[in-house]
Image (cartoon, rainbow, N blue to C red):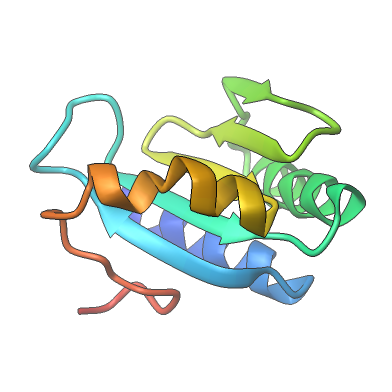
Amino acid sequence: MQAEQLKDLVVNALEDIKAQDVSVVDVRDRTSVTDFMVIASGTSSRHVKSLADSVVSEARDEGIRASNVEGDGSDWILVDLGDVVVHVMMPATREFYDLERFWRDAPDLGAAGSE
């Protein structure tokens, strides 16, 4: 699966269970670690976990295995799918760490993934 398709799969998985403020940042020209960062907020720790679980499940259904999942059951869960790294956070955690600030110059593709 191409990085663009994986990004779309992730966004759909998040939106299917009502993720808030989904943001897609294209970091292909900024880092060799990943192609896209997807950042989303959940309404509770349980919702954050459900969002991350949905991403992992949808990827697994397409034959893609998460190489790492960090922060299970907390205010911030990271799902590393290789070409796409997903950060699911509680709004206060997201505001505090402000990951979008680090990638300020990278194109923010929004939830739809198009500029």
